[in-house]
Image 1: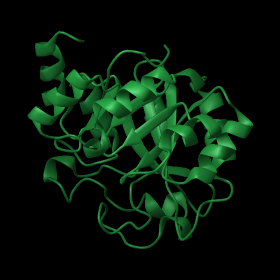
Image 2: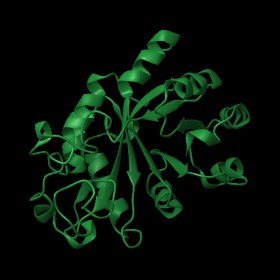
Image 3: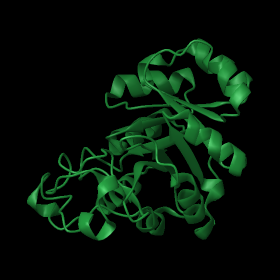
Amino acid sequence: MRISKRFELIGHRGAMAHAPENTLVSFQRAIDMGATMVELDVHLTRDGELVVIHDHELARTTTGSGLVEDMTLAEIRRFDAGIGIHADFRGQKVPTLQEVLEITSHHVALNIEIKAGRQTYPKIIDKLLDIIYQYDARNEIVISSFHRAYLREIRQEDAGIEVALLYSEAVPGILDEAIQEGWQGLHPWYKLVDRELLNEAHRLGLSVRAWTVNQLPDMVSLIRLGTDGICTNFPDILKSVVTELGID
């Protein structure tokens, strides 16, 4: 499969309104609800493994504590990443990126957001690309980040993998930057998306995917504007919207 040029229904950290974020059960639930792309976050462990977790610290989403970069994969796996949401999810662990790709590869697209610890991880791009090649997944992955250095490194190493800049507030000259830097996509906070941005981005050949959109009226409005994808905690609701609008 290749990333669709049509509208992408993106499950944010899986289906985090229905299951513990960034866990295998959450990603599977998003797929079952109709997601065509799932979004996740990656950090690098002390022993060089890519783990799927949003924060650089464990306390919010697991029964453990400590910084991801200071711990090995085995140490992180001792903690439960599901019980904090509901007893039904007891036993969920922080997954590796490889485990997620076992679910998504050649079935749905994947939006990988690269995070940072105390600072950006100097070896994370090499590890990430190795895993992508291992799963022959380069055509079905978008790599996004707020950290431009990561995106520049990926462009230097493999210009065929789509990269997208994440941003949460207005960036003057963002379209010029995207063309100059070679970003193929923009991932703005949804309130920054308007018709002018979309029209100019599309004229330049850029995709615009909005995050994180959880209210039905906002979903409808953004789809009608021509947004290329919406990232949501509620892929089931977004699926009902795209079905109702006849765009799936």
